[in-house]
Length: 321
Image 1: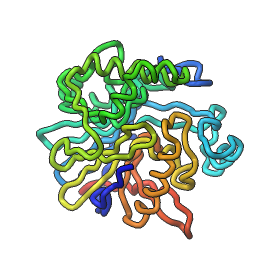
Image 2: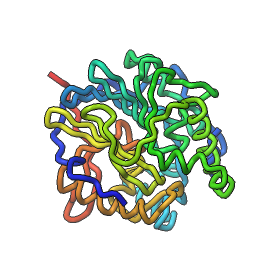
Image 3: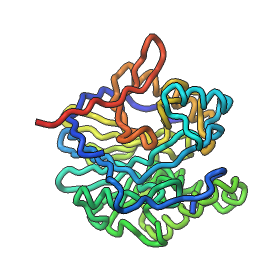
């Protein structure tokens, strides 16, 4: 497994401002498109020359038994202690991040686009940010699970027609393998199908591997485990840094409290657990500023050690002067 370099850490606190706040999974019987009239969640921060906008495509409730490594009753108890237990399980959001530097617009992930839970809000979020879909220059896909890639191809269309798409080559190989699709459980087949559509509609995919500089200051980071080509994205400029860790973390009820709690969609549970076990204490030591796809919106915070117990500390928001 590739070890993360120390460049992924040493984070200074950026200036932050709040602006507002069919994939078939087991026991998720239906999906619902987020109403266009819904309030659009949006939060922005500055990080050196970059403006980073947190957006959300929506959310889905994940049953307690989806979280592996502990009995469902223990997961439910942990969720109850932080007031996160719902009849359908734990609510996970789908965060995306738009990065702009005045010349280039890069989107990290594209959400499920109405195919899972209550979702499909990303286009409204981009519109509210004043960014048309054809104004996106690049999309970095952290991995090819359909809740991260679906928005690229929703409706059978190339929805970001001018964007270069960056995906780790290991994920491209895995999720377009017909034999692996045939052997996969039913709830994963939609990710294979979405990946096939991504490759078909974006024939000039930039198949990268591990650490890769997309533009100066934006670099992918190898976080393999959740999927073979699971990557994070490091953003750094002017002595300030942020690392987007995608599906290394899911909810404060379970992460970073316990590195041994996984998720049913992990392709290599042992590798995913090892990555969390290495990353969580190191991030706490460094005071790393982190963004995560499924943590409560806007998914920004830090891992801190509280008397030896790891916990999630949401980023403190303040109006810019």
